[in-house]
Length: 262
Ligand SMILES: [Zn+2]
Ligand SMILES: [Zn+2]
Image 1 (tube, protein in one colour):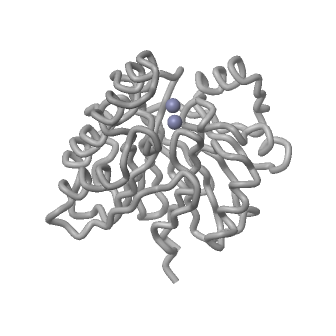
Image 2 (cartoon, helix red, strand yellow):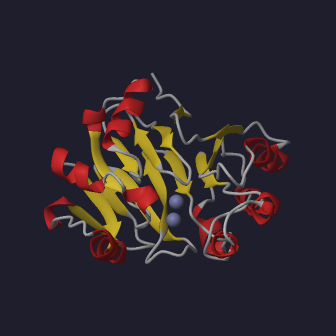
């Protein structure tokens, strides 16, 4: 099978977890929800949790790593993580991932897991060594790109020629500015190492949108500072002359965006 499906199991400031699977091998990108929720949501879309063999971590923020300790205890899956993020997971959260459970990554260098090419690349975000992932599954090219303060040329380069892109659309700048968050938190989110606004998402998407791109999933939407309709509009504007399908990932329920080929 040369085709993988993506499930956005959870996406938003309360927890993030994406899953790729071809029915045999399943790779998770971030595990920021409970193990119970990961299982339930996989079940809900007809996926078998027992197939999860690896977890790639983007950075050490809690909304991306919550289930790491319990996955260490209750599964034998391997963790793909950069050396600096591994250190941060250990020092900040007291989580110790033993060497035999690790595939150490370096941003900009592809690693192999079970025939799946996993390429971490640097994102501008206020964590120790944040990365996003480009995943190549046989011929299928996908990327999960969340938690970045602004679109960079490096990020755009890594999003070229994709079949599927899950991309952060965190906030509407005006809603955030006028909202109830404390000023310091607003400043953090708006900074160049914070989160991607709808507007910046549109800018990045316009730069990377090509004929091959079949599916866009908007991700990590803020429940407080965004309106799904505004995020959708910003992306639809860019995609208006194409047949690219547009989906919104949810905080509370899984979204299956492409079914495996029969
Ligand atoms: Zn983060
Ligand atoms: Zn996050």
